[in-house]
Each structure stands twice: as C-alpha cells, then as structure tokens.
Length: 327
Image 1 (cartoon, rainbow, N blue to C red):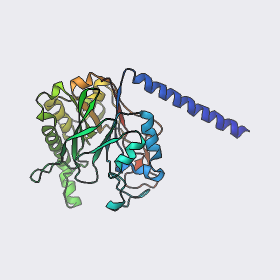
Image 2: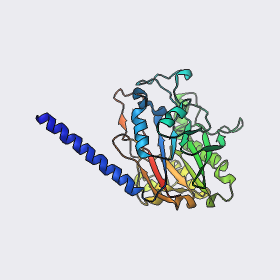
Image 3: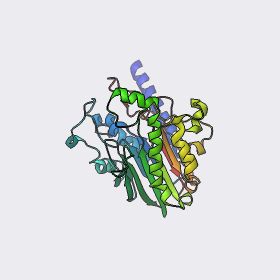
Image 4: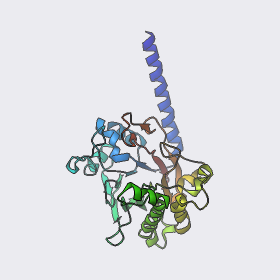
C-alpha cells in the first residue's frame, strides 16, 4: 500500500511538472507563429538507435517546430558501441525523410557533405537549395560541409545557413600525434576555423549586398568561443579562441540571437560549461524573434554513456536551442 502511494505521488509530481513546463512553453511563445529547433544530435542521434528514435520523435513532436536544423545528422556507429557502421547499414542520412515524417515534417534538406558530419534541415514548408558548400579542389576548406537553403514562410523568404566548424585544437589532416601536438601549440585549429567561417560567409551572406535588410540565419556547432562570453571564460583579449566570432561581429550583418535576447548572460550548450552552438540572425529577423533559449529538460540534459565509449553522451553532448518568431 505504501509503495502504491509513493508511486502515485511521484506520478502526480511528474505530471504537475510537465504541465508547468508546457504552460511555460506556451507563455514564452506567446505571439509567435514560427518555431525553429537547432541541435547537434551527436553521431546521428546514436542514442535513439536503441528505441527506434521513439523518445527523439516524441520530444520533437512536443516542441512542435516548423523548422529543425540537425548537426551531426548521419548515423556512424552501431547501437551502444563505438564500432563504425558499414555505409549500407547507416539509417541516416538516407532515411531522414522517413524519420522527419514521424514528427510531421514532409520536407528534408541535406547540406554540403564531405565526411560523416553533415547538417540536415527538416520543415513543414518546402526547402529550396541555394548552395551546398564544401569548397572546390583548390580550396576545400570547409571540413564538415555547409548548407545554404531558403524556406518561404508566411510570405517571408528565410535564408538558412548551416555549418559545423572543424573540431580540434590542431589543423585537420595531420598524420601523427606529434604533428597534431605541434599544430595545437601554434593554435592552428583556431586559425583554421577562422579561415572556414570567412569562406562560408563570403559564399553565403556576403553574396547579397542587401543581406542586412533581409531575413538571414546562420547556425551550427562553431567549436569556438565568443568574446561576448569572455567575462565567463576570461581568455586574453587576443586569444585565438575568439577569432571566429570576432570575424562574424566585425565583417557580417549577423547578430548573436542568444546574446541579444539575454544580454550579459552565459548560456551553456555543452555537457561542460561552454557555449559552442550559436544562432546568428540579421536585424530584421531578430526584430521578429520572440524568444531564443537553450533547452533544458529531462530528455535533453547530457548524461555520460555508462560504457565510457569515446566521448559519447546521451542523448547528445550538446543541448538544443529553440527560437520562436513572429513572422
């Protein structure tokens, strides 16, 4: 009898908390009519492979997004292991249309892909490819690929640029641990990311002289720190870790949506205290943004994989960002 009462009380408590969360979601999104979810889902939502992505789909359906952007959108490893899958056994990216349909998105777009870490866009509205950017043979500098797509929503043309910058402290493609260590000491990973972001911006937003008056977004895993968060990090003013976002702030019309909506606050997107994920917008789109926030809930909080496989976390080592617009 006592166990039954405890179970009932626990169930009621969870129900009350979920009701509160849902009510808060509605209040925060008051007046919004478009929702975007961005998330680095680590290794193609590897954590979802053991339940046919049921928890992932349920979470997305509960958020009711109109547009989703997923980084690391390809299956890589067998379930509950760090053994690489054979290409013919990988569920994603080939079946994104099937998975997205389960949460109500009939349209899917895969950006430029050079390796196992592409980005995917899914939407309730048609998606038009503008460019898939990886660089050409002479300047293949975009390590994981980049996508530039457009979606028409309520008469507005949204430009969406997705990216995932190089992840390491050393420059890509080095053959040995010794070479990587020397490269890291020269901060060549930071310098490479600075080269990547310039290339991406020059081939997307900079091609539109009037982009500052248009609706543009750029989002992804930047693998770099922002000077806007440096009161938290306390890096030297000339630290190479700040190069990427210094370039964006000085050379593009983009604004940091989280910073603009929550000035002076640090918003952690990782399983450790750092922000590597950003959503940038031009001013006209930012003015139509009701809210931009990092999502913290029971499902999205990163938990270290108990098998200690590489650096795997469940459901991901990143947290999602949710943006509500009034378009």
